[in-house]
Length: 113
Image (cartoon, rainbow, N blue to C red; front, side, top):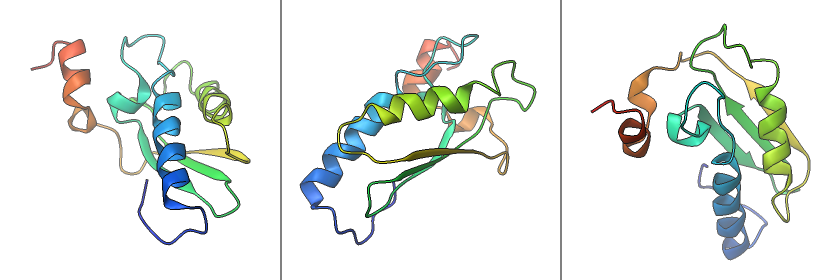
């Protein structure tokens, strides 16, 4: 989430931001027991003044078996957040994902320390 000027009141923007993060943490790659947010698969989330949400995300590998489904899962999860408008998910592969993008929580869960 990038800071900037918004017509949405700051407290409301903070709540939406935290709720979007919580929603993203409900989405898992079925082959990895860590949510996509902690895995570092979410590259960018923009909240527009009209409350439209744009998400840039990637996959751990371009050939991921759920590549066609995961953007819909993300769209559905973010769409449940109170106060958001239209949600669009853009799949990107630049820069390519690598394990350095994972949070410490993900590293612990995957025993990668």
